[in-house]
Length: 252
Ligand code: PEP
Image (cartoon, rainbow, N blue to C red; front, side):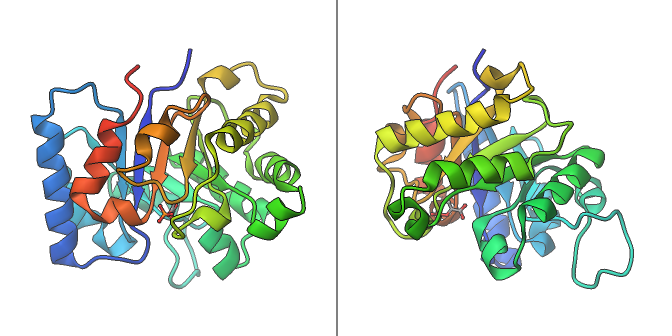
């Protein structure tokens, strides 16, 4: 059985109290009024905006997510946020291992795995990001890189019911460039086959595509075999465009 479609918006380091409230309220109103079979939807604002967004989406089917967590429950980690606090704030999801964090903060697969384990322990679903750089793709190493990232970042206790994986080629993030549907299909198959090592529920795993998804290309990307949804950056900051992506999600 394929996973329920899932569209998540990663706001990255964008927004203010007023813009977050307006964007989340706009999307919540669309979701409440929609007669479509909606996918799972999550908004992942910067941590200081979580409370504002949770108020704005109350009573709608939209859920709350965060962009990162620390691996520890609490303690002397200035500036970090624990998965337990995120859960306490109302989050259901947390992105871990985004390529911007791997690049900006030197996060390795083992760091990502520890964060994903913390998320599970706190009752959150980690959205574990993997993806090759342009140089790795040009060198013919995309599949090997992604295989290693999935194997190294997945907690041992991961199941299709408690984790989501996002395949995000680094060269497609924020660039307006996307892989061909055939390349997306091939890389999602690599992710699913790697997850399947020692696991029987790979058909149920939600694997999201991320990288320059917009209203204009969402239908094509979301129709690719093995794609269960999208992790959306830039386009998730525009209610009209993000809603187009939500409407393009597979209906199953
Ligand atoms: C992302 O940040 O996860 C992302 C996919 O960004 P964008 O949609 O802007 O490429």
